[in-house]
Image (tube, rainbow, N blue to C red; front, side, top):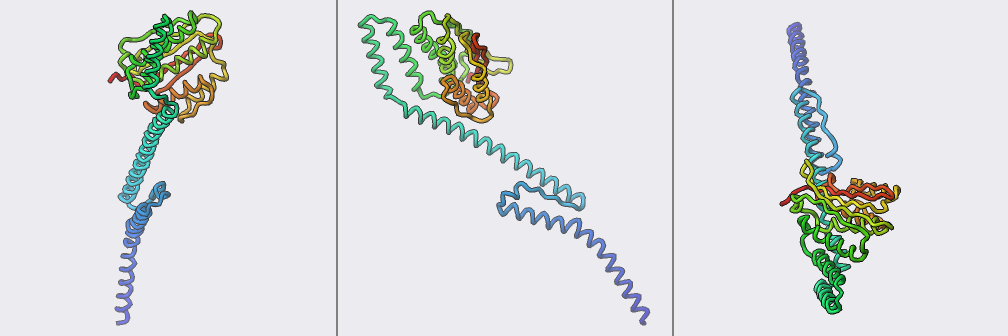
Length: 311
């Protein structure tokens, strides 16, 4: 009888031992990884920002490890989408902020439009009575520029922007007789392309004021446009004036090539170019903007690149 009990106990112990092996395997390969996974999910649900950067590492059966890898891939995609959403929101905020800043600057410097328009009309009348034809032409050009600048549209056809440029050039050619000639090299199909308002006039003003006016010899101003093979609109303003010193040019290039929207310093040339570049990048993206090259004593070339849409 004792021998039977001993045999029974031995068989029972062996059975327990044999059953504990698969049980341990199940615990190590299924239950413990699942518990670790549930703990990880709980940390994510708690809203802990650090948990969003962590990844779960489960060891067990192939199915458990596959689930772990798939879940980590999903977290990576969520993280990437979150970053893109934040970047997009930041860009939209920067565009809105730049627009509000421009509106604020305009309001601070605004003179009553009706008063100024009426004053310009009165000046035209007085100049007409005195027979001052050149003065009449200058005032008319100035009136056109003013009305255009206060018009509500932020995006205009290139054709309209060029009308303001021509008015500005007419004023400068009246002020400085025989100082420079203007050459227009415009592709007809570019004239309906839309561009941000008042991006071309500051560049032309820089070319005249800093390049041609400072030169002792008569010069040439070239304004052109074309659509490249990629469908982008290229607008250029070239002058053969005094050019830009190397250090100044490098500083300008450094600002306009920066990935961040930057603030221009107190250089009039730099303010115009950097502000135009900032507006284009905020509106269309980092791949668009302003490029500048110059040789001291030979002149300056400024190229503007924006999408060539004509809608």
